[in-house]
Image 1 (cartoon, rainbow, N blue to C red):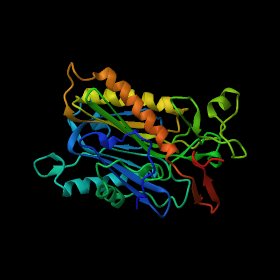
Image 2: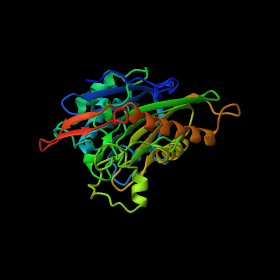
Image 3: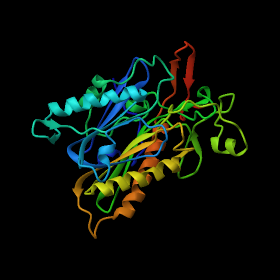
Image 4: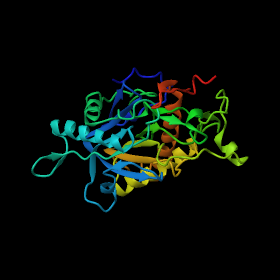
Length: 343
């Protein structure tokens, strides 16, 4: 089950500050994995941008500007690599039971895009989110600020793996929001990056690859610049996922653009980002509570705010994380320190 919420920074905000958005986590206690659902029961205009080269996704093609479906009813983020996509089936079942979905004459069909991250190094990889996990995440969903850190899709997330999994640190899930000119925009990020996580305000490395003795941060960017060679990588073993949501009324074209520029926030907070071993994917949801006009921010400002909340939520994901101790498939004991606990 989901763990208790982590302490939150005053004024950090949450994606649930956006009217019409709910969030629920399921965290599997048998090993560190889980899933997170972002519900928009009344429907939300949606877009997506996949930047990483190793994605695992479901129902992203229907979000293309020229395709038929205009609204979605939830987004599912899950661990478990491609197996974890099964969690979306549980979300569909939950919403159908609630009478939520697109009217297709013969029933109401919930539209639930999904994306997964790779969190298999710790524990028994045969344990991963399934339809029951997705259903449970929906049952736990609310409009309250969601828990952060080692919960939901962030349960088994790690960061800083470029120089070997044994030098990685704990990733997690984080959220943030801002309100400007009557518009609210928020983000929820599950950070399982190959690279380091950077404080976007100070450019300081907060979590990532550690030195060979494991006691301090290596600083991957500087290590690469001086010629240090990374370990051989298994493709797709990372990935940062997220959702940007706003109460603004957007078209599908605008929602896709918002998802695109929101990736600037990942680039500010993760280095390197969008690699061949990451499946970095961001969704955008617009619940349509506020109409854009001359008295509200336009798309340029919304894009800037989207990047900002994504960067803040990514930082929160590692700030809220806690050290993970687990058993590898070969029986070895693993310890992945969190930013708050390193040293």
